Image 1: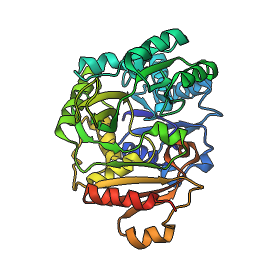
Image 2 (image 1 turned 120 degrees about the vertical axis):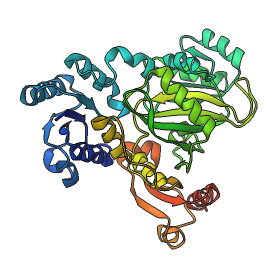
Image 3 (image 1 turned 90 degrees about the vertical axis):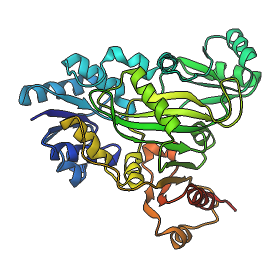
Image 4 (image 1 turned 30 degrees about the horizontal axis):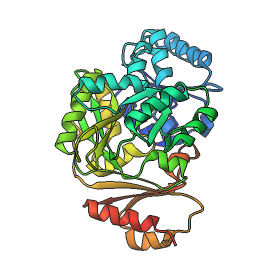
Length: 395
């Protein structure tokens, strides 16, 4: 029996499904989290063999002692994972310290966490990357901007999501950013006019995909956060073959094996320095599933169970779970305080047969994903876009 440590199994809330399928596949599932055991859902409690509570997952010494306890009690740990961007480096440090061979170790982190380093492997995969400059002083930044032109994007070189990401449109914006920014290391990139598209996959130990899907984000997450806007993205009914080929090449360039990944690209919407309209350009890689409820949306879109596929990869290095249908699954996250035309009852009256989930967004995710979500499925992209237009329409 393999011993699997799952870090923070209670967040996001849907991650109990990973634990359930691991245990169902005969794995010994050992959770570590900072949520009191009595506050865990019955589904999660039943999906673990044991749970170790720490006062804070931020406290490395406590988490270290938890792993040591499990090793003392159960022996060798075969896997350690959180599937969570926030804990990616923590996971790698624990694997390194305890010689757990599955997954990334701390020396692997720069190429998968630092946006400046990601570019090396995107280039290796043959994918164009935005020109960039590591933020230092006004003169050097201005020299870079003179080359690429305004606007430019600045963001933490090692960041999570769209936090602290800004569009600078002129010299005044640049000066203000430099005067008020925190001590993080920032990267400055030329602005790309394009739509964010993704290639999401689960790979086996040979780096081969055993599951593929992808989503489209019509609006920039940066704008959603900075403008307190509504959030929308949808899982496609099929990954375009051109994007799938680029996604597989990127997996190979990064040496990804035995992981659930979420790779982001720009689909250019007009001709520009990096290519022609319709070309695909690098954005960033995420060595974990797309965030929040996205894995469940993948299930609805593909008629499958990605939680089981991932657990099958851990247990058997393959899966028999296939896709039973192909449709669009859309997330519409409405922001509190907006004067929407359609009420909750109106939405259900018109789209009730399409809605598969709805409810409040977890507070930790609401900054990016809105405050109240509707998840719905449609046969066509046109129907999907019509639903989004009506749900977000304001008076």
